[in-house]
Length: 631
Image (cartoon, rainbow, N blue to C red):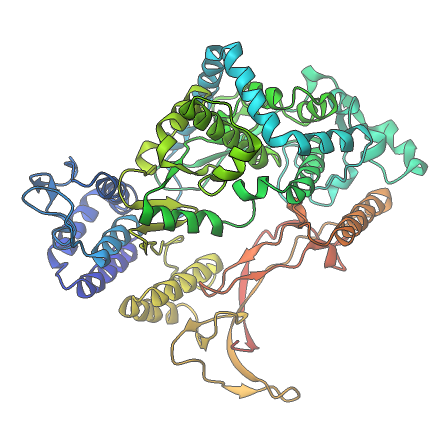
């Protein structure tokens, strides 16, 4: 892990040069604390400093940080940078602050905050304990809601979603749903293609989404249903709660759904997304695929301070099922479908405990993201309505669309109503992360972009430890991307330092364009061809190309026919309305970042001729030297 400290020192020295200051003392201090505290200094202590710095920018003055000694509240650590942003005597924000120093402080403190290192067992156990405690919080929140609260929530959700819910209710009632399996893991451990031979259904699903319509391709295979187990509510398989890497401080907790639940959740999600795209209002305030509107609104908010950016903690785990049922109270078929496709219990392996769920769903459910977005949007407008002390109309909603935007748990709301909106969110069970929410000063953060006074102060983050061997393909790919991101951010010397480290791991590291299929260096000087294709005469360079094959997973019989029919229906649905994006999880194109800026889209499985032989997420990624185009 010493390479992480060395990399940080390189970034600090170059940032100091850019800001006309010195980082020698800062590097010495960081090195001593790294020796004493270990990697947690870079991944936990410094990020806490960075979050405090963002709040200082928002409030306009400095608060003391116990972990760093200072004078009048301003830490001595990174003092050369801080003196260009805050007045050391008063601790107040300078009128002529240095925006380059603002960016440098954020870069140095948050650089290694999200590196994928395993948490300690104690931290994993604590995260699991908080997952269970969150359930109690949801129940307490539900008990505090009055009939008047629920009525107001229902009326606002009707105003927002009446058209879309009416169409979805019709789809459920007439069976116009197209389900789909995703490539991810499921609680019953079926393989990707093995899911098409699923033999488990539930009594709740049978009442609204019957097995004879979803588990077999047509009536000719009805005999296969004799082997299907219809589980009663008490015998249903619970979701499996597992930790996945997030930061060294805490893991991300997700819930792995049973096959039948994930399969039918995808059907409802497809129906929702299809009608959502056709709505003339909702896409203006809710995003599912494109984060750009949120980022642009955050930039504008950092200039005119008319909008605030709010961040929610444990967002999906705090969306109560009571609120979801309240949203759909007028549509019986839709209510039954959303209830039937929701897992009611969760198995927490860390404590060998199965708990009843009060939340609608955790991350892992295909419906988690759209449902939380709908609930949070409803609560934002409830808060605005309470702030204005009048009932909102459809026209009011359209007028407010310029200052409201929701993308998952990233919320943008009007500053004039921010306190009422926060009160409404927290009253209905959400938890606003005050340390990551901004509305006072000129700092705004949304969907991975940060702005201060209209200037982009977003940073580059390291995601994987620097590899020492080319067998660590994931590490090599991440480090090449990191090198190119640093280069494009102006950290040329640090990029050069990484060039030397990368060349010790892989033999071929050519200059390439961002769109090249090989791992290479983005450089302002362009590429140098090493030879030309003998037939096509296009330039070629030798570099490492990423290869990842889906695992062997053969499928035949009725399961293969079912899969092909579902894919045909998917293509027909897309051709019938070309402007509707296919949002199904198993068809979602995967963004692949090889060279830091290059973004290609992996072909959907439906275009793979061997999808009945190989399917699912690759178990391993490898890199192999190949002659390829440098562009």
